[in-house]
Length: 303
Image 1 (cartoon, rainbow, N blue to C red):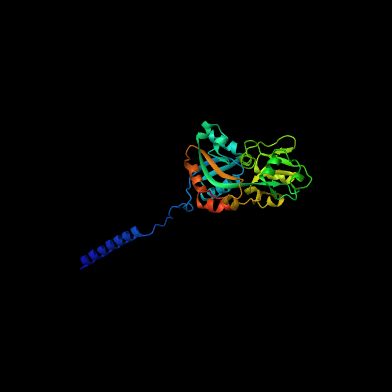
Image 2 (cartoon, rainbow, N blue to C red):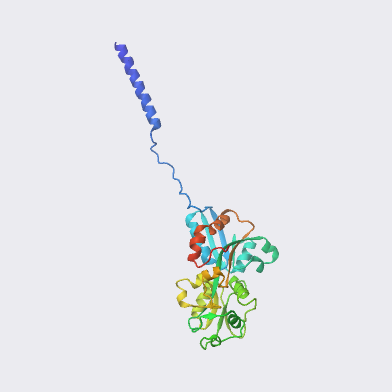
């Protein structure tokens, strides 16, 4: 009887050990699970790396805001946005110094054919420009195409000749590399060269610098992108003029009523890859096309 009792006790102990082992194998581990990085925002293809863009200062506010948004979604990406003018951006991307060249004009208008043919154009928006004057140019709210030609070619040198005050006209130019200057010359001046002698002229190297110069220079006139004119700090200190009676608005650009407009082009040296391709994809996505573009006074890509 005693031996039977011992055998039963041993069996019970073994059963308890087996039960404990089974229980331990199915228990939740005490160690914390590995940390999993959050998924990127829906529709954003995150690629790590570093790229540089340069060129059009008219496009610069849009590209900067888009780059900031992309980097917010994708912390492993660094996108540096520089200005310099369309000609500079095209030259730098053709030489491989930057990954994206921003331009208001087509590459073949600024580069020799061999260099232009190496580039791939990515149209990302529509953009418009507006003729602006210093606030002391009162009584002028509209200039016709012919009046602009007369002013910029030096035929008219005083604002009184177009219904304004008795005040000398001061022309503020952009450099020859500027896409803004090229667009205005082609669309409004009909390809005519501006007068750089016989009147008062200044030259500034960016849309932002022109904006500042116009606000500080009596009798001055120039051309800037909608994004600069509509900035809350700038609009109150400038006079924005109609062109041929049409208001300078994106709606009028879209309808064709307002003609001083062009595509915004981002050029790459060959087909884009890596972060460059991902950023261009983001530029065409709903966040940029539907939210950032209208906020910054641009228009979506024309169909």
